[in-house]
Length: 240
Image 1 (spheres, rainbow, N blue to C red):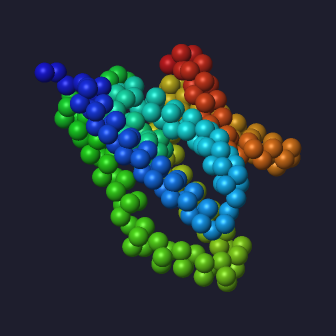
Image 2: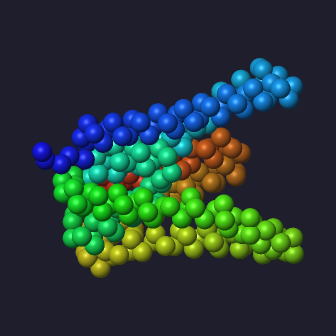
Image 3: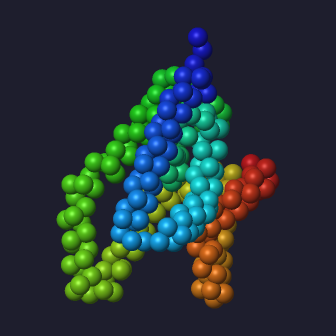
């Protein structure tokens, strides 16, 4: 039987994982609600918090959906559905899949049909994210203590340290953007898309700061992602 990234077996596994995640969410939701009632919190207030929280999860969910759509082009729906619904993020999953495919000499412009390639990509995506699960319980207390100590000494340097760590993480992904810059006009597409996304995020930041549109903080990432994708669709045929 030919391998398919959208096989019924993989869909079955994905459904089981998603059901488990949903059941876990419902379990803690019920426990939190009952605990709130025990503490004397008004039921109406608890319901408002639940509704407002549900509404504000829509925007992050759009980003996750975009990630599933992007990865499903070459990995099918089940694997990206599992990854993006549990612990994955497009900023990690896509580079992990792309680097694995490149190492195996496979193009991700079409659906992966080789089970060995598919398995290798799945293993890299899974094993690569495991440290983020295993290390925090061991190291987080020490790391947090060090950051708190640094901020207590000098709050300005503490904030600068955290910002530097974040920028260092982002810079690790910039190599993929500039990797093909010497390959003609097509190599400019990732750079232009990056600039477009940054510009949209900058506009959202200005609107939040200047126009006091605080609600936009929740939707800024989704707006920049969707806008950059639309921009990529427009310029790709022109520069390829």
